[in-house]
Length: 250
Image 1 (cartoon, rainbow, N blue to C red):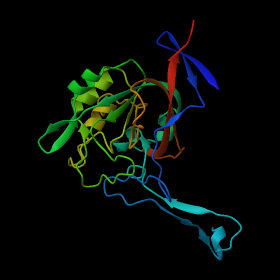
Image 2: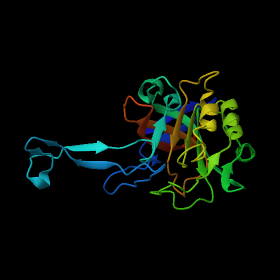
Image 3: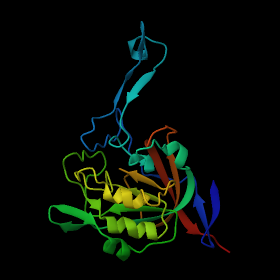
Image 4: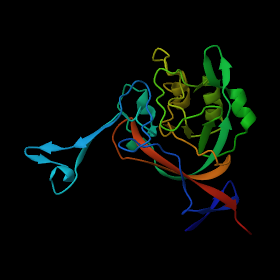
């Protein structure tokens, strides 16, 4: 299926049969990326009385119970509810669907014991006016299925996030486990900057973390389909898929 779309006055085509999945899943044979010492997701047959939800155990159907934490079990999309006292749901605040997205590759800078993505680096990458920005981290290997716990992963300085806010982005997607430092005393400075909380809350902005952008995927403009499970929580497992855009012939 070929989709024709207009972005900032320019016309493009997207082949919807040629999507690039950026997500990491969890469970048996999944990627099972982990972060923040959150244990792996547990998936097992439900047990109700004498019924066990497993065909292998003699039942007529498989029926499983899943226990997980979205923030540390694979790709996830989160809303402002991640840092608010009030309960806010990603399912209520973030509208899934198609949008233009700009993919860039950013190189972290070493500062003391940390690797940081700076505002200067993002400026050097160039920024397009799109609703979403996808940031792939250069020079970090083995991201798929990685256990990031206690590794002090790369993160974004608050000034870099403010740059993205000022540029008008509403959705940020990153291959890192968090836009903030792993251990920061609960400050979550970049999260607060992204959502401009509490001074001027950006209620419909989202953060998607722990994605993987395939190495052969070129930087540039894409059509993004950001989908997540309709769970009433601050975060939900997500599956962002991007589609290459080609200029439409006049």
